[in-house]
Length: 254
Image (cartoon, rainbow, N blue to C red; front, side, top):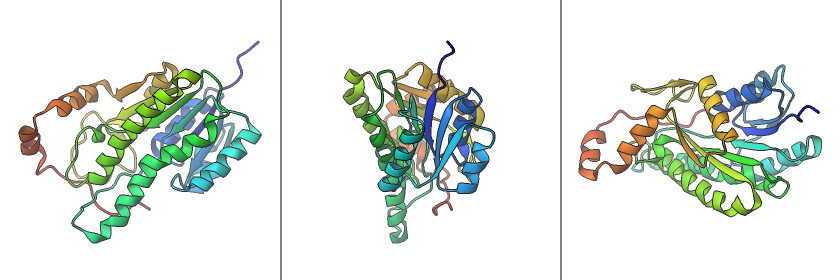
């Protein structure tokens, strides 16, 4: 008998990496649950795929509970859940107007993972995979990007804890830390982005990490070397190199 199609639930699916992951799995016959804040983008991603769309913000736990319940009722327990939604924006602690931006970034990039995974864990079977998208930006604090760096560092540590919690149940937790991906979120960056990948390339590599149940992976491989070097760089040298680094524009994306 042919294998049953994978059941895959993806957040951040209205554009960027989430949309690329949807297309990757959809092209292979997966039954998809797609979550995003922009309904037009979700419908564009879902076109021609076996997909159900749920317009929701991952910062809203109740909305994710509702979307998960609808997917479970329609399709059943997912084989793979991918938390790809996130916010990347510049912030400055000295600026009072940025306080709500800090909260939005932390809520989306950290609590968004919790809101995405929690509704599915009880129903998932042994062999299931939860995948969270972190970032190389979480390895060290980047000036002008304190909220984003802190949120991705927190995401990595949270996912590690969750991996240990679920190991005995046979549910894998995969952390993928990409470098630069060519998406609307990065196209505003006023600086060079070495080893930048297309969203399609990044999606295929994330899917490979999921298939291999990798505990932690940096993509592309060149950025893994960069991340390792940054992690162990002495503070005085890191400060000298990055104090005046170009900064990501401030202001929440629409």
